[in-house]
Length: 198
Image 1: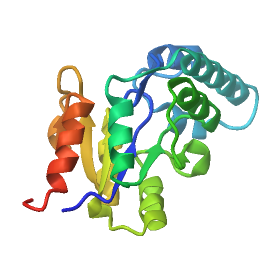
Image 2: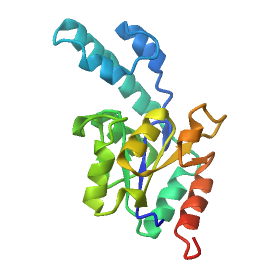
Image 3: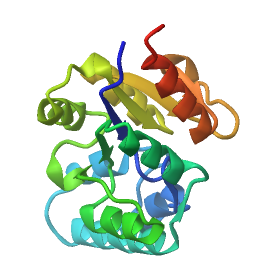
Image 4: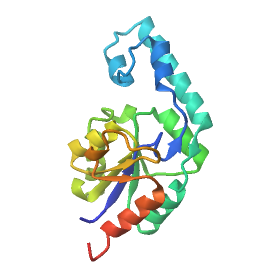
């Protein structure tokens, strides 16, 4: 296995914004635990959908304005840039929110796939699109994220999944190919996978 591309989730992985999903669901009148984007796809056009979209846009705007970079994230991105390994973002956030978050934390990526670009995670389309752009096999790509959506998307695409869990490991951790608690660990993992002895 050689790592020829790395894809990151954004919020909760490279950046921390404190986006409050339970609060968003409450304001929208959605049940606890439902997937917000999927629930909104079932709401017919009209006042309720417009209200829900305004709620989501406001929460994402506020989150983007308080986003901070995760410790070690900039160093990992720079390390992989130096090794000429392509990197991208695949997020369920809006393009406006994602762009502002990246501006605030000083990260730049050539490829940032947001929910406007295709089916959101856990659908694998974004990952497969990046593999096609990079002309690499999915098995040679790592997808790094902090949530079950990321693991499901990665597994469906055939890419290797890395669960970023700086705290306690969640119950779904065994589904990931690798688990890391810091970006320094991620750097070592990628270097090990790309070492000639591997």
